Image (cartoon, rainbow, N blue to C red; front, top):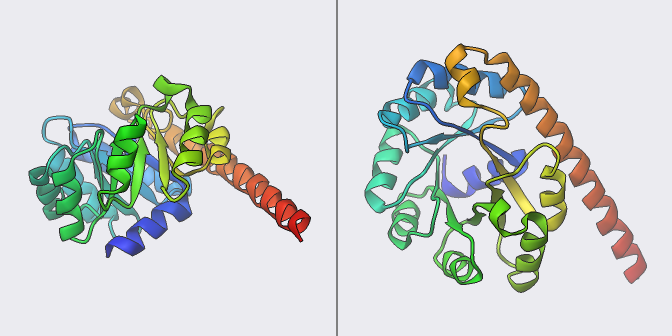
Amino acid sequence: MRRIEAFGRVKHEGIIPAIRTSEPAEAVHAALAIQLGGIMVVEVSLAPAGSLEVLEAVAHKHGKHMVVGAGSIVDAEGVAMAAKAGAQFIVTPGFSAEAVAKAVELDLAVFAGAITPTEVQMASSSGADAVKLFPCFAMAGPRYLKALRGQYPQTQFIASGGVTLDNCGDYIRAGAVALGIGGDIADGESMAAGDHRVFTVRAKRFREALATAREYEDAVRSINVGEGR
């Protein structure tokens, strides 16, 4: 899957659940549960030990149906290893020019991490497909994203870090094109216990909340267009 297609599918889904585990079997089951909940995107964190094997297992099992990405990438070497393991998009926690450049070279969608206006500007001008605003909770959440959108209207933002079922709609209304969700969908305790069914339930709830927020935004845009005539 090429870069443009991968990013398009991520935006269409609007939710990027992250899986963090060192056990390939746990991740494969978790990804299936998320898929059954209607979300066809998953991010595998490469921070834990043995995570490349985890990514490879998820990509092999679910890569034909889901868009599988690699998170916690910090340099070009990490991008190359993730690509070899089957990643279709790259997510960095902070801005790394070399990681973005390598992802672009390999035709992988890349979401560069940033939090301050300076970092956002650097990430936005680096060639990254989107800026992952992380961690959102540390900077007044949706209000902060809305303020940044006012200064960088052409930048596509993915909100991550503290995005919950209760506030995810606020981030969409503030201008996020997608949301990065961690333990609020796939928490480590449930994963270790083999309780993957809860991931399906949570995925469905996030999808419903996202759909409601997007319908609201579509209605507001329609009204604004009508008033402008």
